[in-house]
Image (cartoon, rainbow, N blue to C red):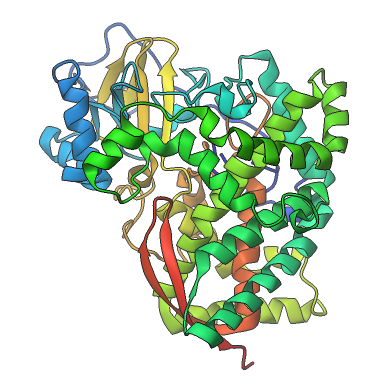
Length: 524
């Protein structure tokens, strides 16, 4: 699923999901983009003052923090980020130290994978959105941060996620993604129902045999099968790929994201194995070729459209593979277990409310699930938005300043020079206590009602606000609304079948490791 990693889900994007617009209108609406505006002045105010209109002007401050000694500083920050403190505490400790949500630091991986790990961190909901404004920041080759994986991992092409909107191919490739999503829209719900019905059958069978079942493996298979069937009308099990897709993707993604993942191995082993030097692409060459062959045979109609746009069939196929396997499948692999975790922790009361809402709406529409019926489930919609807010599929965003900028936090204004790298850690922006009350808590009904809808502009998981839409000119996740829809379908399919469930939660390199220990079948 945003730029993810919109997984990420960079996740793909359809054009539906403004709070005032139904999903059923998703293919007709034109996106309206309201760029974030700011001013650049050579002599900004040195202290807080009040303008003639009564607007408070924030003080101009130097960006605190430093990068330390060459090589030593980046390594120290990397060790703190992964081992000594952990990611969240790494940022919290620097906010505390500098008394600022904007500061200078190094971001992993650093030496020897990243030539320049220096960033200006933006860790509040007011400064973070500048990363979406492509008039101010460049997104070229920044999808994974301060380093870029070898293009040998993507057929020799720089795929859409690594392109800046100013590059000619960006619009063509994003248009191709929009074409795919629009042309296959009627397949989404029936294929999701089919694939996730099989998932729950498998969970129930394993529960009866073992007393518990890992959600990860069955979710990976169901998610991959669903995407291939919905997008390309191809069932992997009926091809040479078989059931190997998820495992092949995992190895391929590891070579791209390994330098910024924690695999749970001893620190020294991780540092030597994945953090110091890039793993050679030949390790997954045969695996990637198997995936490519499957997508090439399955995506002929997309390749035909690509040729009309001036894109070769080969480049189109590599992009479809990346968008499906990395962006969308990766998002579902990360986000669905996390959703299950948060809903599971919500307890019986939340489970009962969701079950009642979902079943009553479906019953009132003759037992049929459609996009229109999903729109009439406000609690279900709010739960998904809250999941995307509290634990977004793509935690980090990067952008390089195209010019000298003034960036505002809640407390001050900071000057960034042209060429400096900006970094935003999204979970801090979307838990900002000055925007979200009880931001660290999962509040299922947070986005219900008029007040809740007004907060949606601060839900930023898709490389853009939830109230805005992907266009050819921006970097917002092309499949933003597709991700929102399938996440709602995931909740719907769960509570169509079960009154409640019980889980155990562990850790994994991508999201939560969820084990299902009980499923209570529907009783009403």
